[in-house]
Length: 226
Image (tube, rainbow, N blue to C red; front, side, top):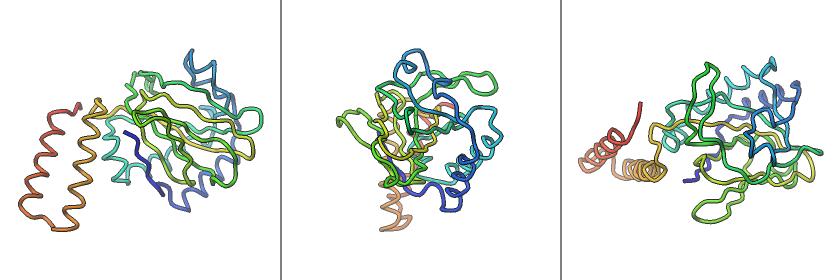
């Protein structure tokens, strides 16, 4: 299940994030790469000790938490602190890989990575290349969103970032453990939630909508972990 969400960041938040990134230093992106990914990862990241990082994470997490579409797509139980990366110059690509199943959180606990997300921070016209290419059941999907928008997809999908041949691609990426670990079950719940939203807009809280809402929550109760 691959979902794109526009305008997750407001224009003010996007400007703040860009300003903080402009004042940040960069290190090799391999600091968070697993053994396999390290062979194909050639980008840069904000280091964990960067003074700007807590504020950057606060802005992004706050924007995600107020976005209902993000919640229904990911059904997040735990969200690891976001990372920020840069593709430019000779550090401009990330080859085909899959994300590690388990991620270590800041408190030393392991979190299962069910869902990955990439938040685009550069205007697509400002750079060439840099598409996030995701392989799913529909085939090869090339994603290049406007700044402030996010793509959410299963961490199990193979994906890559094509070389940036002009300009600079700034982004934020993150991993989360979903309340519903099975991707097909998450898709069913997402489709049902979107259908219920449309029914409410068209007909209001009629008895059949109330009944179907109960079905949604009973499925979530059956499938969710907490």
